[in-house]
Image 1 (cartoon, helix red, strand yellow):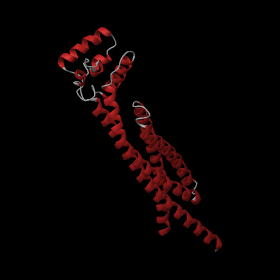
Image 2 (cartoon, rainbow, N blue to C red; image 1 turned 90 degrees about the vertical axis):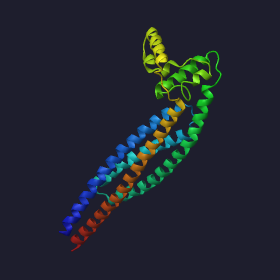
Image 3 (spheres, one colour; image 1 turned 30 degrees about the vertical axis):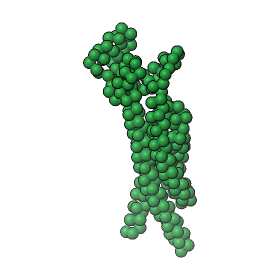
Image 4 (cartoon, one colour; image 1 turned 45 degrees about the vertical axis):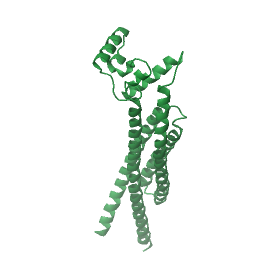
Length: 255
């Protein structure tokens, strides 16, 4: 009876460990994709403004790649019933957990510096005095931000009065998406007349996006960390059971 319960516990541990490794691989792929998207967002502000966080994202991508490899390695170790591979798997997992905690702290701290740099950059760029060919490039850049983040101006549409410029057409979503110039002009006028443009400033919208990105990434990383802790405990249980089974087998053969 005790032997049967032991076998049942061993089988459950193996199944749970394989399931957790699969879940960790899926989670790592999610974090990997999220970090890649985050690096693309950071590119909008230039490498100089987002250098610290960009490095953090690249390190997270590298850690996720290692986590995926370790998940596959753990599944192989369980399926092969190898005690040595399981102990090796546990050792690498402990190293990865320490790395993930350090990376999460690093990225979280870098975010605060990034918010200050992005705020300073946006304020300086919006009120920058542009002339010649830079006027078109400057307008296109802000139209891209306004359309992408559904915002208008730096702190709101009133900012365009400060710089003696009409409200950007990107502040009016229907007008900006129109394909013909005549329709765009009509929709733009209607938008201004009924004040149907975006009211939130791009500074707040972008900072919210950065904070939301950081919260999601740290939250998922924390969840993955606890998956790894559980997986490490299960690996030790499976390895211990396998070791006991080998000892029992040797005693049986001996006698």
